[in-house]
Length: 233
Image (cartoon, rainbow, N blue to C red):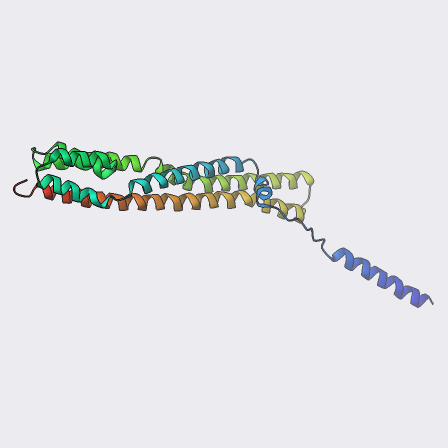
C-alpha cells in the first residue's frame, strides 16, 4: 500500500514539474500602430520625417510630371514661323505653351540677331533656372534617407541602455523582460530603416525624371540653335 502511495506521489511530482516546464504562450497580437507606439519617443521625429518625405515626393512628382508633358507641335510651329521670318508668331507660340522648353526658346528668339554664342548662353541660363525649379526640395529626400536610419539606431541604443539599467536595478536577469524589451526597441531601427529606404527610392525616382526632362530640353535647344544657324535665317 505504501508502495502504491509512493508511486502516486512520484507521478504527481513529475506532472507538476512538467506543467511548470511548459512555457506560457501569450497570445498578444499587436497592430502596426501599437507596435510603432512601443518604439518610444524617437518614433515622433521618424514619423515626422516620413510625413515630410511623402509631401515632398508627391509634390515634386506631380510638378515634374506636369513639366514633362511634351508638346509635339511646339518645335514644329516655332521652326515654321522662324523659317518664314515670323518671329512674333514664334514668340506667341512659346508664350502660350507655358512650358520650360517654351521659355527657353522664347529667350533665344528675343536674342535673334546677336551672335550664336550669346543666344546659346541665354538659352542655357534659362535652362539652368528651369532645372533648379524642378529640383527644388529633392535634396531633402536625400537628407531624410540618411537621417532616418540613424535616428532609429539611436532609439534602439537608448532602449538597450534602459533595459540594462533595469536589469542592474533588479539585481538579476529576467530573460523574458530582456527579450521583450529588445524586440520593442528594435521597432525604432526597423522604422528608421523603412523611412530611409523609401526616401532613398523617392530621391532617385525624382532625379531620373529630371534627368530625362533635361536631356529632352537639351536636344530641343540644340535643334533650335541649329535652326538659327542655318543660312538665310
